[in-house]
Image 1 (cartoon, rainbow, N blue to C red):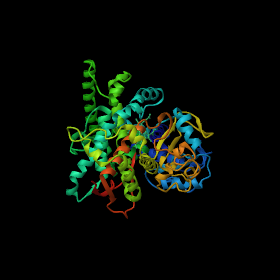
Image 2: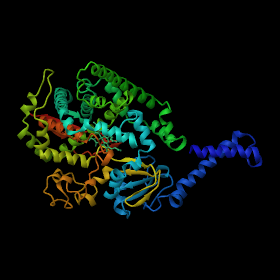
Image 3: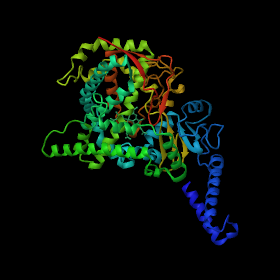
Length: 549
Ligand code: HEM
């Protein structure tokens, strides 16, 4: 829009100078606004009416019918991902792995839906695609230039250097942190129960516990928000996750369509100012921790096993970039696991027989007494069973978690932009094409998972190979392709924290189910999901608990 306005201004100036008889008024006062308005109308006619039909370079990619000039195919005046509609398009729009659709203002999007197109996008041609500006700006405002937003060779080097921190060998050293926080959380919940009439909102607890864990595992810093919800730093962290107000969304839309999204964080609204202030406070703390660790390293002292320490020892990062990586892990590893835990509690509350089966399996090898006894001087702690035991001895727990992650992926969709002309599933994709991939849709696609794709069923991960759904392998949950499970996506940009998240969730579910019997406070209420970058139950999962002994 900015360039169209500029053209309008230039035309107005030229008209007044050389053809004043065509100007609205001989002064610039009326002619310039009139020229800008005309340029906007022309732009609208071009992009909303002519472009999608005649000029788009991806005309060969099929598109659903019923496009409106303002709302595109999605029917809404926001950029919200159209999950339900897209599920229908996959079925009804004949396609070869790609579907073209239009969002608000006829912004063009290409949705990737077949395993071949997904594997091209995420694996074979991963570096042909970059994060679009909107996503880059939103994420980097919080994370700086960390792994989540790095591109090309910079990304390859960062990822290679950080990988050792996420190897199984290293993650298993973090298990005691997971146990200790999970046990601390259930004990604190138990203490507060009488006051709350046995009702809790799961999100308040999971968010605090997962923040503490990522602080401890990431940089040996305990936000201590499970015990102290008023902790200043965790307050700053909650700020970063707060939902933008209606006013802020209008500002975002204005930036997107009128002045360019790159100016979004330069407009000093209360939301942006608050966010930048909170980012700075967290960065200052991370810097302090970094300086302390560097001093220790100089003195030849042990600096610990957290992710920051592993990255520091590599010597491959500047101080600023180490802080960026810390901000990245806080952003990428907190809300995602917190929402996954909320969905896990929702699922076990909704399906009581699943909860009973989980508890039976756990009780057999992980009696409550073991959990109660695993305390240190501070009252909580340590590993009641070794890391390998939780990974290998609880098939139903692992099946349940696989199904939670399939059915309720924390990241419902993500986006890419073609960095240059390329192809996906053999179809031409020109530079600049905006691509979307949706774990939420792929994970429930009946063509990939079979007729029961939309049923929550942990058993699909236990059935013998070949006997379930489409005849797929049980390690795939019966799906016909590896790419049918999109929760952590795949390839060089897949979630580096997948092993971390799975271990953390397994331990949290194990401790929670062992300690409490849980039921939804309002079992008849429909599950409402709120979507921003992650998706989460809108009410934070309100449940009634009974303490088990
Ligand atoms: C259930 C929990 C989690 C889910 C569902 C999840 C999902 C994802 C997804 C879908 C991506 C790809 C995003 C994209 O490229 O657009 C991603 C990337 C990433 N995740 Fe996770 N994540 C989880 C937990 C974690 C944890 C615990 C950490 C860190 C401790 C983490 C760190 C990262 C990082 C650093 C990236 C960027 C990787 C790269 O670009 O190379 N995630 N995650």
